Image (cartoon, rainbow, N blue to C red):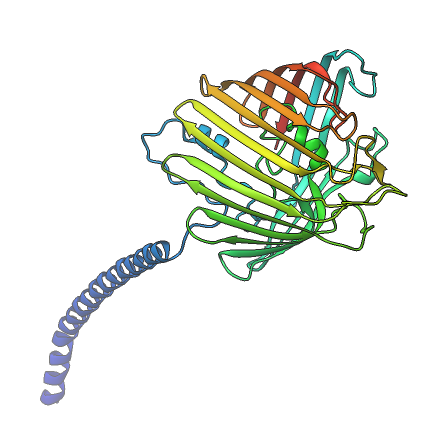
Length: 412
């Protein structure tokens, strides 16, 4: 009995001591576990940062990457506007969402050139562009672009309702393949979006050489080295429409962006054949060569572009409409010199000299000079006032034969 009482006393005395020792041990292990987890998290973050830095050093930036500009540069958005380092880039950098991009451009035109009709020089209030677009990645390897425009329908050109309809495949980070209907890779003015262009319309040469800017075909795009883009494409050569001559046109373009200057320069070529009017024989080449350069310095921006080659035999239409002044073997050339000055964060002024030699409709040479003012209204809106001095009437696809244009763009 005495022995049982002694054991019971020992157990009762040792229980609290054991519990205290256990609690202390648990607390110590918990502290060490938290410390180890914290160290592991810091090590994981360090590994991720080192891996990202290593990848950045090994891989060039994507084709549509913006140039790296130092923090002291207060006008980097203006430089990007002038040089456009992502010109012609693919859709891999954008996420495809249900809500489309919307673009509306309203305009007031007045003071038509002498010798024009209402059809040649629309006057008063116009809706010059109404577009909706979906574009972006479907998966890591596949993207698409789809753009509809309504404004041709009221003008009786419903066949132009589909602007873009293409699929892209990305075999690597540097290369993409595009198939469908899309903008031709030629020069700067052709590829620059209407929502971003400062002047109301593209240069005169664009309306004759590339009406609608688009064609149907396949294009290989590659980011060869840092800042160098290469495009190689094959098209029907019939400006939107089904193939009518059973031959393909080939387009090639190389562009280099020099981030530190900042300056960009490109050369473009098109090799192909075009339709001849019934009963006409001879040279049916549709060969073009072009060069373009863009440069920005502080608040000044300058662009220049020149294109020369075979005179177009047809104009933009569902059925071939042959140009009256076309002759087999005849040549045409054109170009534009554009300069803008950034006055404030929201205000710019610009001037553009535009020239086209060998008009395929009238056969003469045309000169034009534009003066304009742009003002941003919020993040998605811009108002522009443009006055044009033009030597003769032209018959390109934009019918821009008025002296005064006041435009309001909204893009979202």
